[in-house]
Length: 168
Image (cartoon, rainbow, N blue to C red):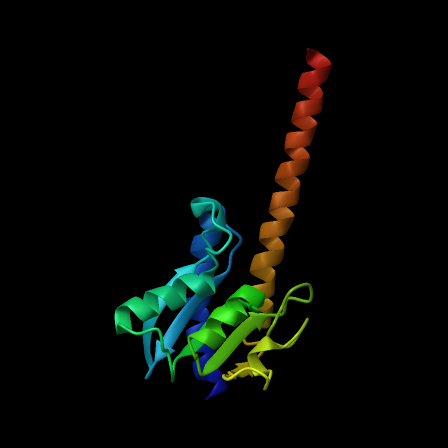
């Protein structure tokens, strides 16, 4: 696929990621495209739903399956702002997504080539084409800013607790 079209779709995933950030979630967004049409959109909802499986990719896959009335997403492309984790890579394989495009790499848990590559392991019965680094800077920056602000909030809360302890 054309790199500029990948950027158009990744911008749509970034819009989803920004919604997650606004909701206090880690800003990760995903979309699924089939035949040039966005058929599913999602963003992280782990904190909101208090569910370890409410990752953007899993939610988007679930939405796409419901929309199409099948668990097989053959021919579909998934765009996600952060490299899929092991769980999401498994869901991608099992749903038979043809192509995965991600922005930021995840050196601690990325399973589309950085930490390990479950999506292209020929021991599985399905492999996905993987395209990396699309709008990498924008995706990485969104995550870095979120975690920087989170650390600052925690630091301020700790200061507040200490000052309350001193005053009591």
